[in-house]
Amino acid sequence: MTPVKTDKQEIDLDVCYREFAPRLFAVAYRILQNQTDALDVVQECFLRAFRNRKKFEARARVSTWLYRITVNLCYDLLRKRTREKKIEYLDNYDIKSVPFDGEKNLQQEKLVGQIKQEMKKLTPKQRTVFILRLYEALPYNEIARITRSRVGTVKATYFQSVMKLRRLLRQRGVLKNEMPAG
Amino acid sequence: MRCQQVEQLILECLTEGVCLPEEIQQHLKQCQHCQQTLAEIKTVVTYCRKETLPSFSEDFWQQRFLSLRGKTVSVPPLRFILGLSGSVAILVMAGLIFFTSPGFRTKFHHETASLQERTLLPSEDELFQLVDYLKEEDPSLGLQLLLKN
Image 1 (cartoon, chains in turn purple, brown):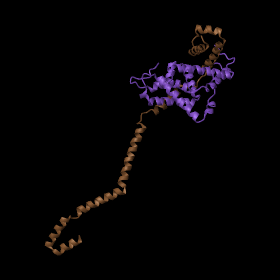
Image 2 (cartoon, helix red, strand yellow; image 1 turned 90 degrees about the vertical axis):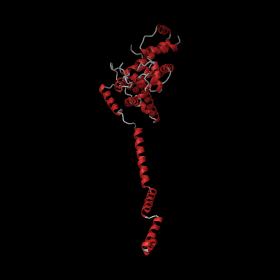
Image 3 (cartoon, each protein chain N blue to C red; image 1 turned 60 degrees about the vertical axis):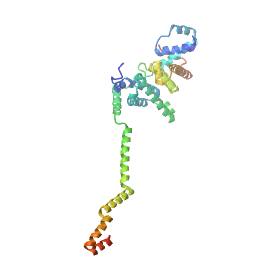
Image 4 (cartoon, each protein chain N blue to C red; image 1 turned 180 degrees about the vertical axis):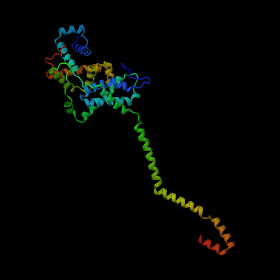
């Protein structure tokens, strides 16, 4: 992995950006379900990181710090949306499914779209833990540092989020006879 | 092994992408409920992972980085600039108010006038000396000057 700190113990913004911007975008996009907002969050995250670089604790990992800023910014945005009573805006916003790389299986695409819809019913904390664990494959202790929770709480939250998703999909009748290939 | 423990382990194995331990496989052979759970969690995890994201080119991220770089150029903190300009403005205003106030002008003129009086007019002793002098030289002129002053 590329070093993200120089000899002067200062964060190298260029290296950090190249390495983490796409990953942070993925997290922000999955939490917010909106491309423009996610891109804005990434920019704001790096701007904050740069401005507060002197406060950064050397013992922590830069990635953890950046993930934490991103997640907090996403929460702020979600709170702002709630304040502005734009919950319905989330439901109608940017829902279009991204096509699969390989086979254009409409059934699968539909199922992914349904899962995406149901994911919006998870709480922000559940969604964050789910995204960081499943998509980013981060270990529980790192997720705990990002979300400022205990490892046990994170494990429980991840389990709950999957079970909730499963229950919601079952209620929708999606999971009845659906079995993934492989 | 309890079913809830098995569910948690199934989720962990599917998340990590590793094979299920022998112990769980044995449990699954006997438990219909956990078989169902395995199938459903597998569906959720598999299809969640199939969701792809909008992808951007290297150039796109480079452009974004350049625009970010522009915002991070170090300028004096806004608080410092505002504080300095505020102090200067207060000083200028105070100076203007002080030097243009009627009180200041009156006092200034009064002091100037009294200074002028003090320098132009002779003192009482000087006046009497002058009168005495003029009395000796020209008594009528001395008297006129005394009356005049």
